[in-house]
Length: 226
Image (cartoon, rainbow, N blue to C red; front, top):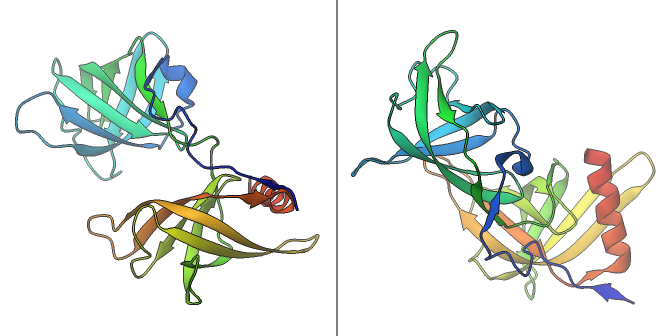
């Protein structure tokens, strides 16, 4: 059977690109981190509200109940984020802050941003049953499939699933209107963590040596969930 080797990380993923902000495809509500360029300050969880090219970028606190942004007019800050395909960052100056009708800060629109492509394609959020096990072992853990692309997936679990670089096998079962789709895919763990304050582990993986017919099934499932 013909196989196709594909990973979630492009060969040139370590290359930092200089891109216009609009090329990132940012959407309202995407998570960000802001940090004031003052010694001793820490990162603040934030979100993207919107942007007007050449004018400004609107960012606000991650919590909709927050009444302050943690930023002050005139200071410089670093903004970092992940679009689902690119990790990016840029430095900007706070033009103005607002508290009504909701808290947000207006930042100077950056001429370009530093971006690194870490995925070949955007992933689609899904909720099909799945299991994850070591490639050589027989024990599988039930996991919650959080998102999926033809190149990789992210899962959540109540216990640790391994270490970055480990070979694993993802079993996926999806009932569609047309047919029952079952997949057993070799993968490699690319990241694994338990977010602060959380009670679940999150693991991201890139698929390895995908058979041609399995790749067709993956594209089909992603198109259904899009």
